[in-house]
Image 1 (spheres, one colour):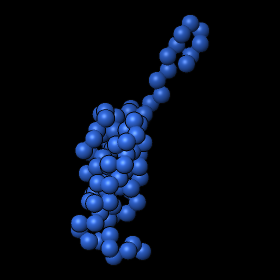
Image 2 (cartoon, helix red, strand yellow):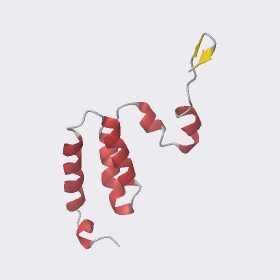
Image 3 (cartoon, rainbow, N blue to C red):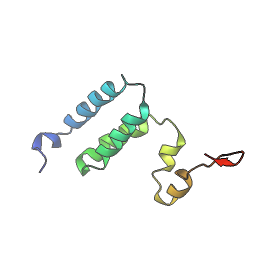
Length: 88
């Protein structure tokens, strides 16, 4: 069960704002996106704040298109490049 303090409307935006400032120190933006995506799916209380952070900093359209389940095979398909007789 979630603590009642997290249900106060001003608490979660402060927590997620702090996380945003901490994540901004790291060069890998995808790591922070993965973290916010995990938080968005953790519980209903985290969903809105985490999604706001995710949509505030879109790196590329793959993140946006990845939210549509039926597009997963297209967005996340493996790209195969052939060099001579080898496939990479």
